[in-house]
Length: 166
Image 1: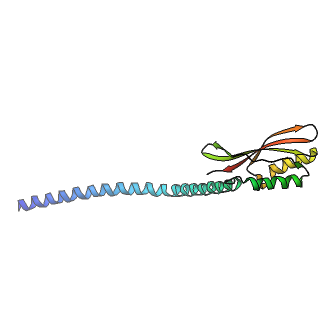
Image 2: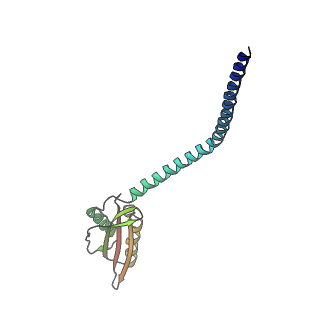
Image 3: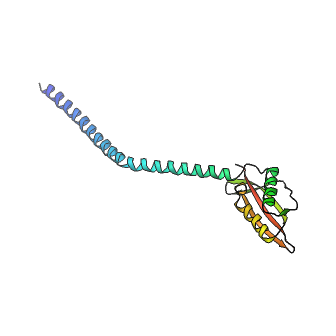
């Protein structure tokens, strides 16, 4: 009987130790679950904000890619320039397209064509031509670099046309 009581007490001690150990683990897991449930709404909002920011950045990138053509077609831009010159009543004396160079800005590489545009006309028409190049959507990726005015109504305009190389 004593031996049976000792075995029973030993079994109760072992069961009690396992029970209290499991109860401690359960309490620890409940605390961790409470912390996770507290953090979940903030993390969900942060994830949504980051997804919105990513979508905005992607949209901005897509918009920028539209602004910068992948290549600068000399025939196409030549036609545009002669059309604008005609609309502005100026004479574009000559037009030659040099081989594009590359320009790296940060991690983005651009194809750049530098043009020299010799034009003749009245001062008002010349300014209209320059303004049209600066504001025309077809020249959104164009930068007017320099304007040299000569006596007699002739002007040489230096422009750079940028193309996105990806």
